[in-house]
Amino acid sequence: MNGTDATDATDGTPVDEERLRRLLGGPDLAWLLERVRRRLERGQQLTGPVSLATATAAQRAAAERLLGRAPSGGRALTVRLDAVDAVLVRSGISPGGLTAAVTALTGPVVPLEEVRRSEDRAWAQAYAPLTALAGEDPRLARWTGRVRDDGLVRRLARTPEAARPLLDQVARVLRALPAEPPRSLSVFAADLLGSAHSLDDGTPAATLCLSGIRALTGHPDGAGAAWRRAAWASAGLLRDDVSSTVLVLNLRGTPALDWMADVGDPCVLTLRQLAHRPPPTTPPVVHICENPAVLSAAADTHGPDGLPLVCLQGQPSAAALALLAHLHALGAAFRYHGDFDWGGLRIAMTLRAHVPWEPWRYTAADYRAAVAAAGPAPQPLTGAAAPSPWDPDLARALTEHGVRMEEEAVLDALLADLAGRGQDTP
Image 1 (cartoon, helix red, strand yellow):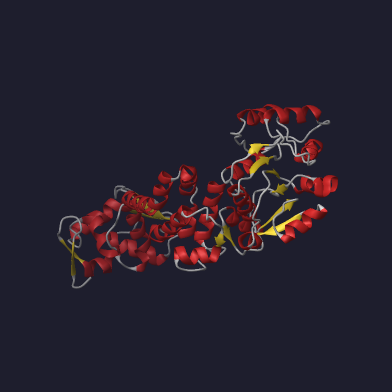
Image 2 (image 1 turned 90 degrees about the vertical axis):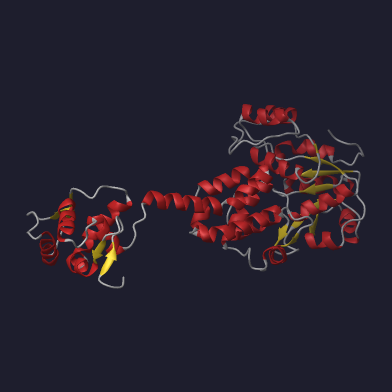
């Protein structure tokens, strides 16, 4: 401050700043100013004693000069705040007392409650893009609440000022997903956010977007580079166009597919192949399974005579979704079978969100029959429950029996349906 006097923060009466600094502003009484300021921030009264457990001789001498007498004895240095206030008022150094003196020496004091309210308002404004997003897409409502409550945004952005532009980016990305047809992740980021590296691994935007994608697509939790690649792909965003693949058997329409179907061997299709040379025709019915073991057994059992079969290999890849969407547009009907467990139901729900299908031995009656035919000690059902809207009784049956039945447990029945007799299966 300029000059000798500063205005009292409480009633406008000048504070004698020069004398105040000599009396109270030295380093040996910094501990006392800090204690007083903390009380003011908390809205507490400046009365009663404050103590310093291990005081130096210089700190004791400074307290004695302040009070005009030696402080109380004992190992700790104890100073009564009302006594300090009285000295400041009586001497005319700070007619407004201790509150005015501390404000003059350390700056205005903002109560912590006011700081918290201001911070809460700032964070509420920062979260506005997610709040709007939750109102637009019910699938993201629970996710936005969880992200707000678990502190993930605060850990990534640190401040409301940094959080607002970050959440603007995240909301823009999630509004644009899933990308149909699938797109390069870097090109998508460049087009939407202005930089091809905006969604690189480890960036706050990528971390939050991947979290939101799980809510959008039902992609399971996980970690690692392979999981991140699969999670992006589940929303139609690809690191490249050859890593995403789908496994098929006896599907025809291109020279490569015809060649593999002629010998009854499985064929792996990349997203690049499907984007540039998709099959121009489709069979009327395409069966879909979850696990490669079913497709491999069908190739061994039926060879080129088996019905066309597509294998998801777990959560449907971008290549699988691109193939099935293409076949659906050509008029194909789908029959789907998966594992009888909660994960299997979630995979079925993800597929159902992209293309329509009818259950292929994938109902409550089929599950109960599989349980009845199972050997001793089947594997227990684990994980969080999932719905089965194509047959609500299936989810109830899973809960009732509490065991999981993998596709391999009903392999014989599935293979019989794929025998190529030219008939649909239930």
